[in-house]
Length: 287
Image 1: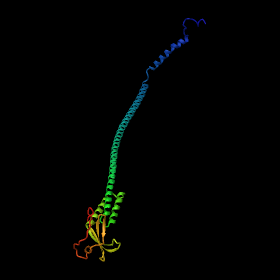
Image 2 (image 1 turned 30 degrees about the vertical axis):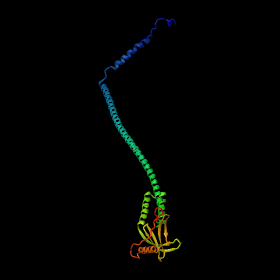
Image 3 (image 1 turned 135 degrees about the vertical axis):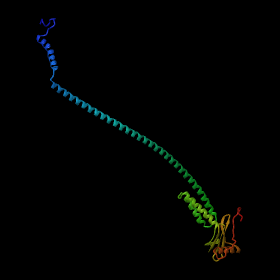
């Protein structure tokens, strides 16, 4: 116990001290053994092995370099193709946008054209309606005039004008056809007023008697009738109230003139001038 609590440093035991000094000696012997000269054959084998390892490493390095070079080439080619595709895509987008702009412009032009056409069509329809109204007014005036006009085929002429007026008001035929038919009816009225004819017919006197005979017409100036037996004559007079037939109290000269005019028109007598009675209502009711 007194040795344990002593203030003097402890000294190692003799065996421990010998081991400590023996370790550097063993290490030194190992180093000497490693540095000891090696036989030539062993050195050659070692160098050959090292050279093979170096060659292998160089081959690996070369192969890695080739792989790296190929990878870089593939990367460059990929980048090139990517840029080309991007450029092509950008060009396609540009062309598409240009086409879209062109289609928008064409759509706008077409929209404006259709708007203008609709406006023109509306104007045309409005003008056509106004023109039909004007034609309707003119035809009504013509019908009113024919009702008081020379009574030659009056009912047929009135029926033709009324039919045309109805077709125009109901717009069942084009305006162009209305104009063509209107001019045709007007021309027919002018033609009948400028020619003469004789034709057979039946005449009813103011007393209600009927006679078969022939009518003779000189344009729209006068018209006369003579019976087949020559006993009944009549002629058309225009009064302020309209056209009326005169068949009562005719003079012998008037009867003879009418008979001669009918015979000349039929070709039974030689052509010559024959006086015929004419009565025209003047302004103020005079004759």
